[in-house]
Length: 77
Length: 204
Image 1 (cartoon, rainbow over the protein chains, first blue to last red):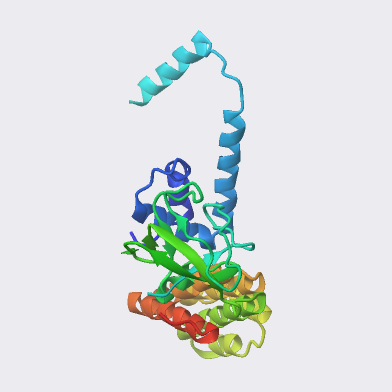
Image 2 (cartoon, rainbow over the protein chains, first blue to last red):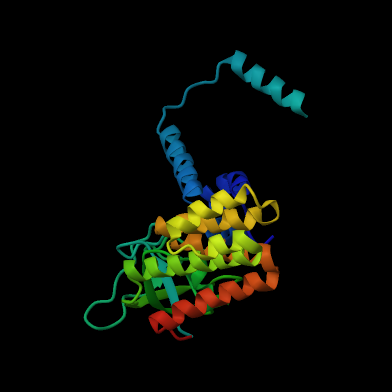
């Protein structure tokens, strides 16, 4: 792969923001961001969302929600 | 080896957000260690060879000195430390504008390679990029075999008018690949790099 498109960037945005991409993939992401303002906006939105969520207080997960999420994940397997 | 680095206005790293210390008193700026407290990039200080420049266009261009082992990647080099030596004064808003326009006209010329007859004449006769954009979009509906090249010409014109030099260079490279193949794309990127080096007086 010598470059990525916008759709592929969306798949890579989480490891990009976590700084866990290998160097060649990081290059592909940053080369794309240099020339794609849409994806720059997208990355900034995700970064802002992570920042906003990180500032929320911890709340215990209601048992009903925990069971529903576990069931949904099980169904996807 | 002389290296270069594109930064955002104010000598800010475009991805790291790191504010590079600028040269003062006639000498280079202080060294920045990639793993030190002053930089955020643990992977190394990144810089460009001349051939890498078209991939990373931004508001400011700086000559940088790299220290330690320099590792080469496809479109950049990286080293454990680096410092700004001087700003390339020729890379101004006007230079970015001219460069974006040159790339857009080259993208128009690629579309011409895919056209014949009256359609080619219409696109060739455009004297402004605004005319290129509107004409190429109009022709794209009537010329199915050249549609993609025409859309690229229109988009290239639009990005130049919008002062998006990096996007314009990217479109020109892809227009070359679409119309004439991988070698043409590589040649287009080489032209873009050489053009920058010549205009700005850069050397390797």
